[in-house]
Length: 103
Image (cartoon, rainbow, N blue to C red; front, side, top):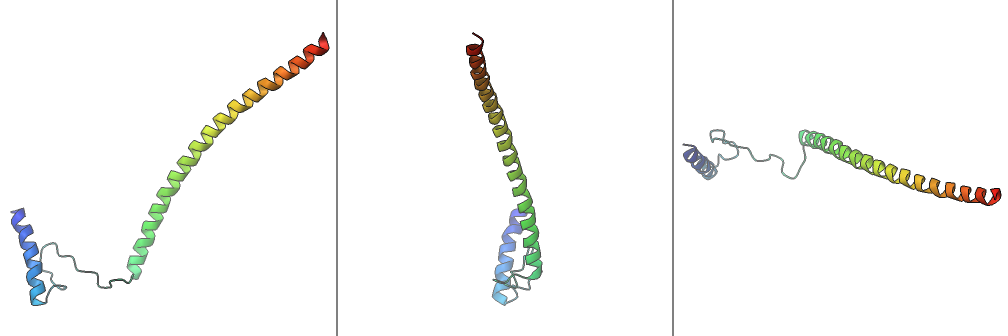
């Protein structure tokens, strides 16, 4: 049944085009009217586009925050290791200097 309806839907649009009723053809199943303003953005289309941009931008910001957070965490761990290493070097230098004085 669905196959027959899909086949008839295509035939219905073709028939409406032949008789000149195509853009205003409301009887065809699943009929979607063509864009009434091709190449021109209407206010409704512009507002919808702006909403889509806001959603997309919020998603991108979340991704960027996650990336930045991961980078800061890894750099903090690296910085901690570097500080510990530098601290050990300075301690060794101080101990060596004090050992030379105390002898």
